[in-house]
Image (cartoon, rainbow, N blue to C red; front, side, top):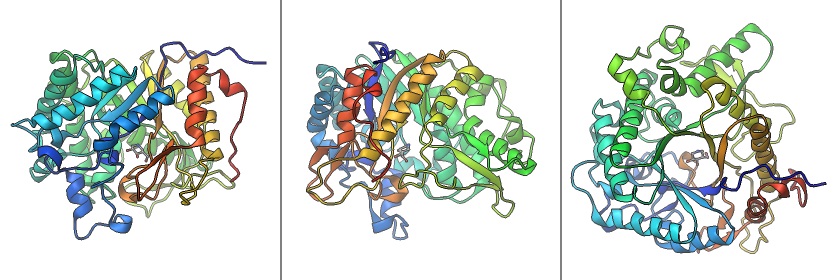
Length: 458
Ligand code: IFM
Protein backbone atom coordinates (compact mmCIF):
# COMPACT_ATOMS: atom_id res chain seq x y z
CA UNK A 1 0.00 0.00 0.00
CA UNK A 2 1.21 3.49 -0.79
CA UNK A 3 1.17 6.06 1.97
CA UNK A 4 -0.22 9.30 0.54
CA UNK A 5 2.49 11.92 0.07
CA UNK A 6 2.56 14.43 2.88
CA UNK A 7 5.12 16.72 1.30
CA UNK A 8 3.12 19.75 0.19
CA UNK A 9 3.09 20.92 -3.42
CA UNK A 10 5.29 23.95 -2.66
CA UNK A 11 7.91 21.91 -0.76
CA UNK A 12 11.42 22.77 -1.97
CA UNK A 13 13.36 19.85 -3.43
CA UNK A 14 16.84 21.10 -4.01
CA UNK A 15 20.55 20.45 -4.13
CA UNK A 16 23.19 22.61 -2.46
CA UNK A 17 26.71 23.79 -3.20
CA UNK A 18 28.97 26.63 -2.06
CA UNK A 19 31.09 29.03 -4.09
CA UNK A 20 34.62 28.01 -3.09
CA UNK A 21 33.76 24.31 -3.19
CA UNK A 22 32.49 24.26 -6.78
CA UNK A 23 33.15 27.42 -8.75
CA UNK A 24 36.88 27.37 -9.49
CA UNK A 25 38.33 30.41 -11.30
CA UNK A 26 38.73 32.20 -7.97
CA UNK A 27 40.49 35.23 -9.44
CA UNK A 28 38.57 35.48 -12.72
CA UNK A 29 37.11 38.71 -14.06
CA UNK A 30 38.40 41.03 -11.39
CA UNK A 31 37.62 38.91 -8.31
CA UNK A 32 39.86 39.38 -5.29
CA UNK A 33 41.47 36.47 -3.44
CA UNK A 34 39.63 34.89 -0.53
CA UNK A 35 41.09 33.62 2.73
CA UNK A 36 40.55 30.06 1.41
CA UNK A 37 42.56 30.88 -1.70
CA UNK A 38 45.38 32.02 0.55
CA UNK A 39 44.95 29.15 3.00
CA UNK A 40 45.09 26.44 0.32
CA UNK A 41 48.11 28.06 -1.35
CA UNK A 42 50.09 28.55 1.86
CA UNK A 43 53.47 26.76 1.74
CA UNK A 44 52.55 24.87 4.92
CA UNK A 45 49.07 23.80 3.71
CA UNK A 46 48.05 20.56 5.44
CA UNK A 47 45.29 19.78 2.95
CA UNK A 48 45.89 16.33 1.44
CA UNK A 49 47.50 16.55 -1.99
CA UNK A 50 47.73 20.32 -1.45
CA UNK A 51 44.30 20.43 -3.09
CA UNK A 52 42.68 23.81 -3.61
CA UNK A 53 39.66 25.45 -5.24
CA UNK A 54 41.48 26.79 -8.31
CA UNK A 55 39.47 24.56 -10.64
CA UNK A 56 37.05 22.74 -8.30
CA UNK A 57 34.08 21.70 -10.50
CA UNK A 58 34.55 24.68 -12.84
CA UNK A 59 30.98 25.62 -12.02
CA UNK A 60 31.97 29.21 -12.84
CA UNK A 61 32.02 28.20 -16.51
CA UNK A 62 29.93 25.02 -16.53
CA UNK A 63 26.92 26.26 -14.53
CA UNK A 64 24.58 26.03 -17.56
CA UNK A 65 25.26 22.29 -17.68
CA UNK A 66 24.73 21.97 -13.91
CA UNK A 67 21.51 23.90 -14.11
CA UNK A 68 20.29 21.69 -16.97
CA UNK A 69 21.06 18.63 -14.83
CA UNK A 70 19.01 19.96 -11.92
CA UNK A 71 16.18 20.66 -14.31
CA UNK A 72 16.41 17.16 -15.77
CA UNK A 73 16.25 15.77 -12.23
CA UNK A 74 13.04 17.72 -11.64
CA UNK A 75 14.40 19.77 -8.73
CA UNK A 76 12.69 23.06 -7.97
CA UNK A 77 15.39 24.87 -5.97
CA UNK A 78 19.15 25.40 -5.94
CA UNK A 79 21.02 26.51 -2.83
CA UNK A 80 24.34 28.16 -3.63
CA UNK A 81 26.55 30.81 -2.07
CA UNK A 82 27.99 34.02 -3.41
CA UNK A 83 31.70 34.63 -3.39
CA UNK A 84 32.08 37.85 -1.41
CA UNK A 85 35.40 38.67 -3.08
CA UNK A 86 33.90 38.35 -6.58
CA UNK A 87 31.43 41.08 -5.66
CA UNK A 88 33.79 43.19 -3.55
CA UNK A 89 37.38 42.25 -4.41
CA UNK A 90 38.75 44.08 -1.36
CA UNK A 91 35.81 43.00 0.82
CA UNK A 92 34.37 46.53 0.92
CA UNK A 93 34.37 49.67 -1.19
CA UNK A 94 34.53 49.25 -4.95
CA UNK A 95 32.13 46.62 -6.36
CA UNK A 96 33.15 44.36 -9.25
CA UNK A 97 30.56 44.56 -12.01
CA UNK A 98 31.73 41.32 -13.65
CA UNK A 99 31.26 39.40 -10.38
CA UNK A 100 27.74 40.73 -9.99
CA UNK A 101 26.99 39.92 -13.63
CA UNK A 102 28.00 36.28 -13.09
CA UNK A 103 25.38 35.78 -10.37
CA UNK A 104 22.88 37.88 -12.28
CA UNK A 105 23.06 35.47 -15.21
CA UNK A 106 22.89 32.43 -12.95
CA UNK A 107 19.80 33.73 -11.14
CA UNK A 108 18.00 34.65 -14.35
CA UNK A 109 18.70 31.25 -15.85
CA UNK A 110 17.56 29.43 -12.70
CA UNK A 111 14.27 31.28 -12.68
CA UNK A 112 13.79 30.60 -16.33
CA UNK A 113 14.34 26.88 -15.67
CA UNK A 114 11.82 26.89 -12.81
CA UNK A 115 14.42 26.55 -10.05
CA UNK A 116 14.14 28.79 -7.00
CA UNK A 117 17.48 30.39 -6.08
CA UNK A 118 18.23 30.00 -2.37
CA UNK A 119 21.26 32.18 -1.75
CA UNK A 120 23.80 32.01 1.07
CA UNK A 121 25.82 35.17 1.55
CA UNK A 122 28.67 33.67 3.55
CA UNK A 123 29.81 30.09 3.17
CA UNK A 124 33.32 30.53 4.64
CA UNK A 125 35.29 32.33 1.91
CA UNK A 126 36.14 35.70 3.43
CA UNK A 127 37.89 38.26 1.21
CA UNK A 128 41.62 37.97 1.96
CA UNK A 129 41.83 41.76 2.39
CA UNK A 130 39.43 41.50 5.35
CA UNK A 131 41.31 38.54 6.82
CA UNK A 132 44.38 40.76 6.78
CA UNK A 133 42.46 43.18 8.98
CA UNK A 134 41.74 40.43 11.50
CA UNK A 135 38.76 38.78 9.83
CA UNK A 136 36.04 37.73 12.27
CA UNK A 137 38.20 38.88 15.17
CA UNK A 138 37.72 42.48 14.06
CA UNK A 139 34.73 44.28 15.63
CA UNK A 140 34.18 46.04 12.27
CA UNK A 141 33.13 42.72 10.69
CA UNK A 142 29.46 43.50 11.14
CA UNK A 143 29.83 46.66 9.05
CA UNK A 144 31.76 44.83 6.34
CA UNK A 145 29.11 42.14 6.22
CA UNK A 146 26.21 44.61 6.17
CA UNK A 147 27.78 46.47 3.23
CA UNK A 148 28.22 43.23 1.30
CA UNK A 149 24.74 41.92 2.18
CA UNK A 150 23.15 45.18 1.08
CA UNK A 151 24.98 45.14 -2.26
CA UNK A 152 24.01 41.51 -2.93
CA UNK A 153 20.36 41.98 -1.99
CA UNK A 154 20.07 45.26 -3.86
CA UNK A 155 21.42 43.59 -7.01
CA UNK A 156 19.62 40.24 -6.85
CA UNK A 157 16.79 40.79 -4.36
CA UNK A 158 14.27 41.62 -7.06
CA UNK A 159 14.56 37.97 -8.17
CA UNK A 160 16.03 36.06 -5.22
CA UNK A 161 13.44 35.70 -2.48
CA UNK A 162 15.37 33.56 0.02
CA UNK A 163 18.59 34.73 1.65
CA UNK A 164 20.83 33.06 4.21
CA UNK A 165 23.25 35.26 6.13
CA UNK A 166 25.83 32.76 7.43
CA UNK A 167 26.36 29.07 6.83
CA UNK A 168 27.29 27.11 9.98
CA UNK A 169 28.71 29.82 12.27
CA UNK A 170 29.89 27.16 14.71
CA UNK A 171 32.19 25.67 12.08
CA UNK A 172 33.54 29.11 11.21
CA UNK A 173 34.48 29.70 14.84
CA UNK A 174 35.61 26.19 15.82
CA UNK A 175 37.42 24.91 12.74
CA UNK A 176 38.89 28.33 11.95
CA UNK A 177 40.00 29.24 15.48
CA UNK A 178 40.30 26.07 17.61
CA UNK A 179 41.36 23.15 15.43
CA UNK A 180 42.89 25.34 12.72
CA UNK A 181 41.63 22.92 10.06
CA UNK A 182 39.94 25.76 8.21
CA UNK A 183 41.02 29.27 7.23
CA UNK A 184 42.39 31.29 8.94
CA UNK A 185 44.00 28.24 10.62
CA UNK A 186 44.23 29.61 14.15
CA UNK A 187 44.49 27.31 17.15
CA UNK A 188 43.46 29.59 19.94
CA UNK A 189 40.35 28.73 21.90
CA UNK A 190 40.32 32.13 23.58
CA UNK A 191 39.40 33.71 20.23
CA UNK A 192 36.09 31.86 20.00
CA UNK A 193 33.89 34.12 22.18
CA UNK A 194 34.98 37.17 20.20
CA UNK A 195 34.50 35.50 16.82
CA UNK A 196 31.15 34.15 17.98
CA UNK A 197 29.92 37.61 19.04
CA UNK A 198 31.06 39.17 15.77
CA UNK A 199 29.34 36.45 13.73
CA UNK A 200 26.11 36.99 15.62
CA UNK A 201 26.33 40.76 15.18
CA UNK A 202 27.06 40.28 11.46
CA UNK A 203 24.08 37.95 11.14
CA UNK A 204 21.75 40.55 12.69
CA UNK A 205 23.25 43.42 10.69
CA UNK A 206 23.04 41.28 7.55
CA UNK A 207 19.34 40.55 8.10
CA UNK A 208 18.69 44.27 8.52
CA UNK A 209 20.77 45.23 5.47
CA UNK A 210 19.00 42.64 3.31
CA UNK A 211 15.60 43.85 4.42
CA UNK A 212 16.60 47.48 3.78
CA UNK A 213 17.56 46.41 0.25
CA UNK A 214 14.14 44.81 -0.26
CA UNK A 215 14.89 41.13 0.44
CA UNK A 216 11.75 39.09 0.99
CA UNK A 217 12.92 36.34 3.37
CA UNK A 218 16.14 36.11 5.37
CA UNK A 219 17.39 33.41 7.72
CA UNK A 220 20.43 31.66 9.17
CA UNK A 221 21.81 28.14 8.60
CA UNK A 222 23.26 26.16 11.50
CA UNK A 223 24.70 22.66 11.62
CA UNK A 224 23.22 20.59 14.42
CA UNK A 225 24.45 17.28 15.76
CA UNK A 226 22.56 15.71 18.65
CA UNK A 227 24.89 14.82 21.52
CA UNK A 228 24.13 11.64 23.41
CA UNK A 229 26.14 10.63 26.49
CA UNK A 230 28.43 7.71 25.72
CA UNK A 231 27.35 6.05 28.99
CA UNK A 232 25.11 6.85 31.91
CA UNK A 233 28.07 7.95 34.03
CA UNK A 234 27.45 11.47 35.35
CA UNK A 235 30.66 12.80 33.69
CA UNK A 236 29.52 11.62 30.27
CA UNK A 237 26.04 13.02 30.76
CA UNK A 238 27.55 16.36 31.72
CA UNK A 239 30.03 16.26 28.82
CA UNK A 240 27.16 15.70 26.36
CA UNK A 241 25.31 18.69 27.83
CA UNK A 242 28.39 20.87 27.50
CA UNK A 243 29.10 19.71 23.94
CA UNK A 244 25.48 20.46 23.06
CA UNK A 245 25.68 23.98 24.50
CA UNK A 246 28.94 24.67 22.67
CA UNK A 247 27.98 23.29 19.27
CA UNK A 248 24.20 23.29 18.99
CA UNK A 249 23.04 26.13 21.22
CA UNK A 250 25.87 28.68 20.95
CA UNK A 251 24.19 30.54 18.08
CA UNK A 252 20.54 29.56 18.47
CA UNK A 253 20.11 30.65 22.09
CA UNK A 254 21.32 34.21 21.43
CA UNK A 255 19.14 34.59 18.35
CA UNK A 256 15.95 33.12 19.80
CA UNK A 257 16.42 33.78 23.53
CA UNK A 258 18.78 36.74 23.69
CA UNK A 259 21.71 35.19 25.59
CA UNK A 260 24.39 32.52 25.39
CA UNK A 261 23.79 29.20 27.19
CA UNK A 262 24.74 29.52 30.89
CA UNK A 263 27.57 27.01 30.62
CA UNK A 264 29.30 29.30 28.13
CA UNK A 265 28.57 32.52 30.04
CA UNK A 266 29.30 31.57 33.58
CA UNK A 267 30.14 27.90 33.69
CA UNK A 268 33.30 26.00 32.94
CA UNK A 269 34.14 27.82 29.76
CA UNK A 270 32.69 31.12 30.90
CA UNK A 271 34.24 33.69 28.62
CA UNK A 272 31.22 34.33 26.40
CA UNK A 273 29.86 37.81 27.00
CA UNK A 274 26.49 39.03 28.14
CA UNK A 275 25.06 41.14 25.36
CA UNK A 276 24.59 44.88 25.60
CA UNK A 277 20.96 45.90 24.95
CA UNK A 278 22.00 47.15 21.49
CA UNK A 279 23.72 43.88 20.62
CA UNK A 280 20.80 41.85 21.93
CA UNK A 281 18.30 43.63 19.74
CA UNK A 282 20.63 43.42 16.73
CA UNK A 283 21.22 39.70 17.23
CA UNK A 284 17.53 39.06 17.79
CA UNK A 285 16.45 40.82 14.61
CA UNK A 286 13.52 38.63 13.53
CA UNK A 287 14.23 36.11 10.79
CA UNK A 288 11.89 34.31 8.42
CA UNK A 289 13.22 30.76 8.63
CA UNK A 290 15.98 28.62 10.05
CA UNK A 291 18.04 26.27 7.91
CA UNK A 292 19.39 23.11 9.54
CA UNK A 293 22.31 21.12 8.19
CA UNK A 294 22.26 17.59 9.56
CA UNK A 295 24.68 14.75 8.91
CA UNK A 296 25.14 12.63 12.04
CA UNK A 297 24.97 12.42 15.83
CA UNK A 298 27.72 12.22 18.42
CA UNK A 299 28.13 9.84 21.35
CA UNK A 300 30.02 12.07 23.72
CA UNK A 301 32.38 10.94 26.47
CA UNK A 302 34.13 12.98 29.16
CA UNK A 303 37.82 13.20 28.27
CA UNK A 304 39.78 15.48 30.65
CA UNK A 305 43.12 15.45 28.76
CA UNK A 306 41.32 16.75 25.68
CA UNK A 307 41.71 20.46 26.37
CA UNK A 308 40.29 23.04 26.12
CA UNK A 309 37.05 21.11 25.57
CA UNK A 310 37.24 18.00 27.76
CA UNK A 311 35.13 15.62 25.75
CA UNK A 312 35.29 13.58 22.57
CA UNK A 313 32.98 11.68 20.27
CA UNK A 314 33.34 7.92 20.56
CA UNK A 315 32.53 5.52 17.73
CA UNK A 316 29.37 3.48 18.06
CA UNK A 317 30.29 -0.20 17.80
CA UNK A 318 28.99 -1.89 14.62
CA UNK A 319 27.60 1.35 13.30
CA UNK A 320 27.37 2.27 9.65
CA UNK A 321 29.70 5.10 8.87
CA UNK A 322 30.40 7.33 5.90
CA UNK A 323 33.94 8.00 4.67
CA UNK A 324 33.89 11.14 6.86
CA UNK A 325 33.70 8.68 9.79
CA UNK A 326 30.19 9.93 10.55
CA UNK A 327 27.62 7.47 11.84
CA UNK A 328 24.51 7.06 9.70
CA UNK A 329 21.77 7.99 12.16
CA UNK A 330 18.55 9.18 10.50
CA UNK A 331 16.53 9.31 13.73
CA UNK A 332 18.81 12.18 14.75
CA UNK A 333 17.32 14.29 11.98
CA UNK A 334 13.72 13.92 13.11
CA UNK A 335 14.79 14.43 16.73
CA UNK A 336 16.70 17.57 15.77
CA UNK A 337 13.81 19.07 13.82
CA UNK A 338 11.37 18.28 16.62
CA UNK A 339 13.73 19.65 19.26
CA UNK A 340 14.20 22.98 17.46
CA UNK A 341 10.46 23.25 16.88
CA UNK A 342 9.69 22.52 20.55
CA UNK A 343 12.41 24.77 21.93
CA UNK A 344 12.08 27.85 19.76
CA UNK A 345 8.48 27.75 18.62
CA UNK A 346 6.81 27.04 15.33
CA UNK A 347 9.27 28.75 13.00
CA UNK A 348 9.58 27.60 9.38
CA UNK A 349 12.49 25.17 9.07
CA UNK A 350 14.37 23.84 6.07
CA UNK A 351 16.88 21.04 5.85
CA UNK A 352 19.48 23.09 4.02
CA UNK A 353 22.07 20.27 3.87
CA UNK A 354 21.93 16.53 4.30
CA UNK A 355 23.93 13.89 2.50
CA UNK A 356 26.77 11.42 2.71
CA UNK A 357 30.26 10.76 1.42
CA UNK A 358 30.74 7.13 0.42
CA UNK A 359 33.63 5.42 -1.38
CA UNK A 360 32.39 5.69 -4.95
CA UNK A 361 34.55 3.69 -7.37
CA UNK A 362 37.24 5.82 -9.02
CA UNK A 363 36.87 3.95 -12.33
CA UNK A 364 35.59 6.42 -14.98
CA UNK A 365 33.55 3.52 -16.42
CA UNK A 366 31.65 3.14 -13.11
CA UNK A 367 27.92 2.77 -13.78
CA UNK A 368 26.95 5.25 -11.05
CA UNK A 369 25.23 2.76 -8.77
CA UNK A 370 25.56 4.10 -5.20
CA UNK A 371 23.14 2.05 -3.08
CA UNK A 372 24.57 3.39 0.18
CA UNK A 373 23.84 7.01 -0.73
CA UNK A 374 20.37 5.99 -1.97
CA UNK A 375 19.70 4.33 1.39
CA UNK A 376 21.07 7.33 3.27
CA UNK A 377 18.86 9.80 1.40
CA UNK A 378 15.74 7.71 1.67
CA UNK A 379 16.14 7.07 5.38
CA UNK A 380 16.77 10.76 6.10
CA UNK A 381 13.84 11.92 3.97
CA UNK A 382 11.65 9.55 5.94
CA UNK A 383 12.98 11.20 9.08
CA UNK A 384 11.94 14.59 7.67
CA UNK A 385 8.50 13.21 6.89
CA UNK A 386 8.25 11.84 10.41
CA UNK A 387 9.04 15.25 11.91
CA UNK A 388 6.46 16.88 9.63
CA UNK A 389 3.94 14.27 10.72
CA UNK A 390 4.70 15.34 14.31
CA UNK A 391 3.77 18.91 13.44
CA UNK A 392 7.11 20.47 12.47
CA UNK A 393 6.85 23.07 9.72
CA UNK A 394 9.56 21.90 7.27
CA UNK A 395 9.50 23.81 4.00
CA UNK A 396 12.25 22.15 2.00
CA UNK A 397 15.12 19.70 1.76
CA UNK A 398 18.43 20.31 -0.01
CA UNK A 399 20.73 17.37 -0.70
CA UNK A 400 24.40 17.99 -0.05
CA UNK A 401 25.72 18.15 -2.58
CA UNK A 402 24.78 18.56 -6.20
CA UNK A 403 28.36 17.75 -7.23
CA UNK A 404 31.39 15.92 -5.90
CA UNK A 405 33.44 18.91 -4.80
CA UNK A 406 36.20 20.42 -2.68
CA UNK A 407 35.63 19.20 0.87
CA UNK A 408 37.69 21.89 2.62
CA UNK A 409 40.46 20.42 4.83
CA UNK A 410 39.95 17.02 3.16
CA UNK A 411 40.41 18.24 -0.39
CA UNK A 412 38.69 16.20 -3.09
CA UNK A 413 38.86 12.94 -1.13
CA UNK A 414 35.20 12.99 -0.05
CA UNK A 415 32.46 12.26 -2.57
CA UNK A 416 29.19 13.86 -1.44
CA UNK A 417 27.71 14.49 -4.91
CA UNK A 418 24.46 13.29 -6.38
CA UNK A 419 26.43 13.85 -9.55
CA UNK A 420 29.89 12.43 -10.12
CA UNK A 421 32.48 14.89 -11.38
CA UNK A 422 35.35 13.21 -13.17
CA UNK A 423 38.50 14.55 -11.50
CA UNK A 424 40.34 14.86 -14.82
CA UNK A 425 37.76 15.77 -17.44
CA UNK A 426 35.20 17.31 -15.04
CA UNK A 427 32.51 15.42 -16.94
CA UNK A 428 29.30 15.22 -14.92
CA UNK A 429 27.42 11.92 -14.52
CA UNK A 430 24.37 11.64 -12.28
CA UNK A 431 24.62 8.76 -9.82
CA UNK A 432 21.72 6.43 -9.03
CA UNK A 433 21.08 8.52 -5.91
CA UNK A 434 20.38 11.55 -8.13
CA UNK A 435 17.63 9.62 -9.92
CA UNK A 436 16.31 8.19 -6.66
CA UNK A 437 16.08 11.71 -5.23
CA UNK A 438 14.45 12.89 -8.44
CA UNK A 439 11.79 10.21 -8.16
CA UNK A 440 11.07 11.08 -4.53
CA UNK A 441 10.69 14.75 -5.47
CA UNK A 442 8.51 13.95 -8.49
CA UNK A 443 6.16 11.80 -6.40
CA UNK A 444 6.24 14.27 -3.47
CA UNK A 445 7.50 11.53 -1.22
CA UNK A 446 5.37 8.56 -2.13
CA UNK A 447 8.38 6.88 -3.77
CA UNK A 448 9.77 6.60 -0.23
CA UNK A 449 7.36 3.73 0.32
CA UNK A 450 8.12 1.69 -2.76
CA UNK A 451 10.87 0.87 -5.22
CA UNK A 452 14.58 0.37 -4.69
CA UNK A 453 15.50 0.99 -1.08
CA UNK A 454 19.23 1.19 -1.59
CA UNK A 455 21.54 -0.70 0.71
CA UNK A 456 24.28 0.08 3.15
CA UNK A 457 26.14 -3.06 2.08
CA UNK A 458 28.56 -2.37 -0.75
O1 IFM B 1 30.99 20.41 2.58
C1 IFM B 1 30.44 20.83 3.78
C2 IFM B 1 29.68 22.13 3.59
O2 IFM B 1 30.48 23.13 3.05
C3 IFM B 1 29.14 22.61 4.92
N1 IFM B 1 28.40 21.58 5.59
C4 IFM B 1 29.00 20.28 5.70
C5 IFM B 1 29.48 19.80 4.34
C6 IFM B 1 30.11 18.41 4.47
O3 IFM B 1 31.17 18.42 5.35
